[in-house]
Structures are given as structure tokens and as C-alpha cells.
Length: 155
Image 1 (cartoon, helix red, strand yellow):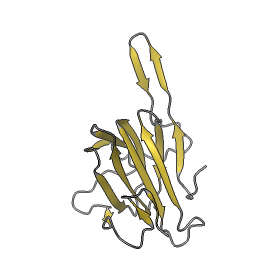
Image 2 (cartoon, rainbow, N blue to C red):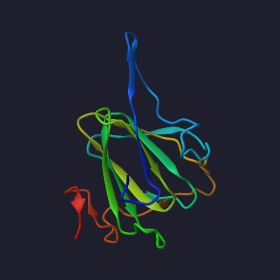
Image 3 (tube, rainbow, N blue to C red):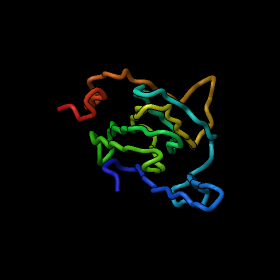
Image 4 (tube, helix red, strand yellow):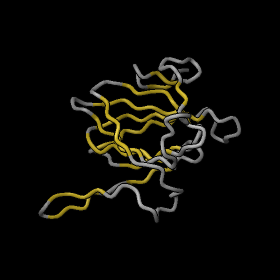
């Protein structure tokens, strides 16, 4: 169970046979499936932080398919029962998870290790190039009580 209302985490499991592995990530019959917008992969080089941003309409579904990442979520929603909570997940080849990130939850990730990290997202909405549903916040914004440098909450 997440400390942020509306965030869901689905443990993922590799299915293996003598030919290799298969990792089923997201299914239409998952209980939290809403709708399909698109699927894309974003990458980050080792040590790179891609943060902060949020969406007003879009629900994200993150899974790291290569490498490892630290994914941070911050609940800044005014009417949320978990406003002010931070969640930290270490996700990737050693801990495969699917993380559902609701609209208005601020989030970002850092590529860990010595290789490029590939993060797959299946958002509920397609990207609108003319009017993007993406709102960026500077990395060191003091309104978000999290330090990427130390990897800890700021008090």
C-alpha cells in the first residue's frame, strides 16, 4: 500500500523458459486500468535526474525495463488525504514494478548504476504536442521537501 492516495504499485514477475524471459507489465484487465493513451520509453544516463513534473489530466504508469531508477512521488494535491507525503521506489531489473501515478502527483526519477536507464510509460492520454499536459517544476524547488543529492526528505 502506498503512502500517497491513488498511487498503486504492481509487483512484476519474469516468466522464464529455456529461450529467455518475458516480463508482462500492464494489462487491460488490471483492476486499475483506465484507458490507453500511448506507450513510450524515455532514457537517462547514469546519475541524471529527470524531475520535477506533473500532469493535470494524465495518469502515468511507470516501469523500468533496463537498468535501475529511483522514482520519487510527492503528493501536493490540496484535497488529498495524503497531501505532503513522499514515496521513494527503487525500480528496475532487480526490482520490477509498475507504478501508477495519478494526475497532480509531482514526480521524477534518477538513473542509478553505471548504465543507461530505460523507463517505459503507458500514460492514460496521448501526448498533445500543441497543448502538452506537462507542468515542470525546477529540480531544487524548496516547495518540494526532497533532496536528490542526499536522497532524503528535507525537514
